[in-house]
Image (cartoon, rainbow, N blue to C red; front, side):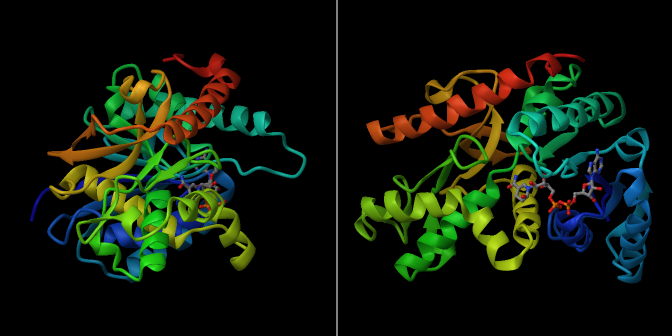
Length: 328
Ligand code: NAX
């Protein structure tokens, strides 16, 4: 057996954390030959519940799970960790304005960025899930000056998977036969789910569905899928979000298939004319634990308009939390 990888989950007693921990510990993220140590981090009020999660993990007697650390201290939670999955965030409460939510979360992610910088493995990979995920990732990254920006990402894989699901459903095809979906931009209602590059069994998606269907039905549905789930379940997406976390980290570490790419929110490097200094969802391929932004895709006038809208939203989010950037 290999040496265990250490994985920190913040907000581990929450809905997504609860759905995620067991999947990581059973081998879904890194494969069935890779042992793991889980470092589960919570706020003090949630420690009793976290203790219960720890007990259940123990009761699974999972052969790959070498150790479980439960803590409310980031210095312990992030100690020498290889993967930091930042799920814990402040939810929007009644009467809270969007900017208040941004600022409240900015404080959490600035502190966590500093702590990761100080305590995590030098090669740590960070995935931010807690909303507003893209801007939280930007804050964490800019508060970790000893780490490379490329070690930070935010999750748009759930939106990517939702796009595959919708397209498979509409075309009566299998998800496994679809390639090259893209989520551009922010994990929010301005995101742009793009199927213009998609193929289904090698055939361009736009030979099987109309552009009008994509514009009038698919795009708005993906953009508002989170709300649709809440309406149906009375709770927000948890299992599907945990599954997307597994997919995101799995592909980042173990690589993407040769004929496909995935969507990851990563620090913009100016590709596709997107401003640098924001965390933007883009198509990427992964090899040997590193991602590379797919280059050279054609951006038509419709796509450009959509890219601009979501870019502007991220720039305005950044303006709200500007004071918390580069505090490292
Ligand atoms: P829950 O409220 O069930 O759980 C959040 C947990 O985080 C709680 O147990 C809380 O005690 C803990 N927490 C809060 N602040 C913390 C801190 N500073 N350190 C450690 N733990 C802390 O929410 P859940 O349904 O699990 O969702 C978590 C986050 O994921 C939310 O911000 C949500 O909006 C976001 N989502 C992001 C998605 C994405 O695709 N990027 C999709 C799913 C989800 O909506």
